[in-house]
Image 1: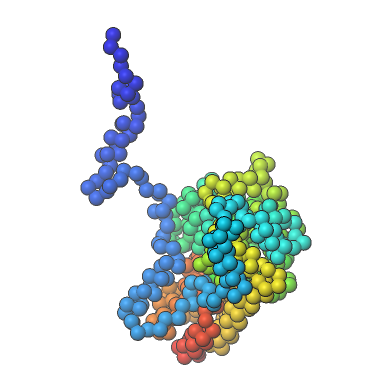
Image 2 (image 1 turned 90 degrees about the vertical axis):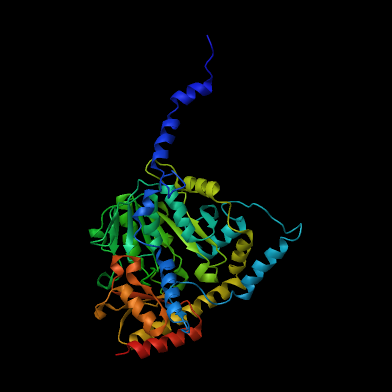
Length: 442
């Protein structure tokens, strides 16, 4: 009896053949792939907020090629790196050209001296250890990595308004339903309204229980920094519900008020229910250098008792090769007690002065203004104009050649507001204020 080869049998029975045939039927003349698209991308309502602002800016310039655009929209730093910090980057870069200074792959969790120094500067006398600090290429990237840790089957709450990455990455991960145009919200996300009526802190008694709570203080975009009592309430709420808080403190160094914590871990017991993300971007001008960190305490556990830090470490070692060794040396220079920290504080102070100038001018124009104190963002109420945030964005751009950010881009709670960023050159800030005054002063 002739032998039937394994390959012949597979060709008759292996399901991939039938599957491939079915896929082949789906391929049209306009497609070069039979791979289905990730359906979660189809849920996104439009392009990510800031690229969309960039697109509209380019369109305005095409129509008005002689316009002098002042960009106070995207929160990108403008001032040169402080010299001590730049020298740290430069020395590390030049060191790579020597046998003694060269380094290749480093620890994915970050250089031990940098992890230790972050702990000393930002978590002194707090229940955080150096090996709970993970150095990365930025807090925005870490939020995406945290989504991998949590997976698609958790529920999510966000401040409304809030930084768009919390919502958009949740959508991409498959945590949400479709977008409901009637209320401008995604099904499956708990939007915790934060507005002037509640002092920009959600009424937690009215909020549904979720697995994950994204909370940013000082808030982007409103500039509201939570008080100690508010954060105590948030921590108690999370503990009661068995939730995990992802606390974004990327602007914490702008806080001046002692009653407004710079870290969630200033609240007793927060290490049991909170992860904190932070960044050198707005402290040391590292928006392009890219360096941040995430704190995952060992005391934080999943429902089954397993440590969250174990899974986050696995994600970091699986999907990441560590932050740039040059950038990490820049971070060490920024945290040098004698030269770096004072230079970093001076840079933060520059933008805080900008914020005060903008806030004062908008108040002088008769607007209700929030933020601009303890934060680098100014949140301006334009609701009495009877226009949407995007319409006000367009009017401001058309009449003043100033790029702002429409409040509704941060969530439905931002409708009627416009965010103005204090990240800009002082001369541009002054000129922008003059243009706004001439256009909008009552």
